[in-house]
Length: 114
Length: 116
Image (tube, rainbow over all chains, first blue to last red; front, side, top):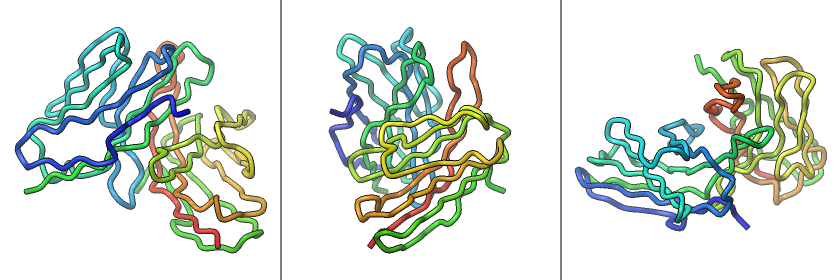
């Protein structure tokens, strides 16, 4: 069973509107969460992260929200731009576990239409 | 120049062949990782290495082996390739962050491997 799930394989949004990408996890030991962005023919690049001691982290147009009780996090992009079109991966790790490996979700393909 | 490079970028091979994928980094990081990406499954960890003398199996190590030749080089081998190893393979590096946790991982551009 996947411990990190992104249930929407794709999302289409109009330029200027808000994009909301969702991620659910099952392992209650996860205490640090990251979002990576991936363009075609490139490797994933780090976008934004959040520690479990917070419920929100903002960086420019990108905000990540964490709801620990629901084991859910979301990435908000406002306003969305065509250059945001990419695959977004949610990832989680347990910082108390030796190795601190990342567990990734399956990804959501975001398409921002001009 | 890219900080994390992978060679080859694309490879087509036949079932049973031995294949080596190479990764080099100039970031000076101690930690290196190999992942494979399959549609809908995200990235899954194959092997990881915290320094030259340290090699660890990840989630899906069966059918793969690795070699950490130097701090900057980490290679992945498929001893006898099979079709279900067709995937996109990524190498990544990270430093040791604060509080003993691994820092952000930096990924190479990927190798697309097709096993016929």
